Image (cartoon, rainbow, N blue to C red):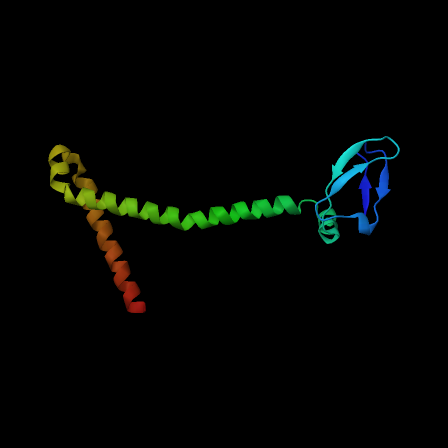
Length: 128
């Protein structure tokens, strides 16, 4: 394995038997700098040298997977909130209309929308 000196001017070849799994302290014989040199699997080093952005790509992929895994719960939460708002508006329809008489158009539109949804569900039932 070839390592770089801490001063980045010199390179040294380390024999395979001197490489440990955790790493070790090394001293440059020329400039007398001392540092801890971590060693890793040479196969992994080869992969990282061939594709230096592999670490960044894996973190991006994890972030994308995390975002995708959040889509379903957020969508379900949104649908539950919409359903609850609908139920509250239906339950307090007469109170809301007595307070805000201009909401009658909204409720009529809501009834039309409900009929359209029912018709679509019936159509889907017939297909399946």
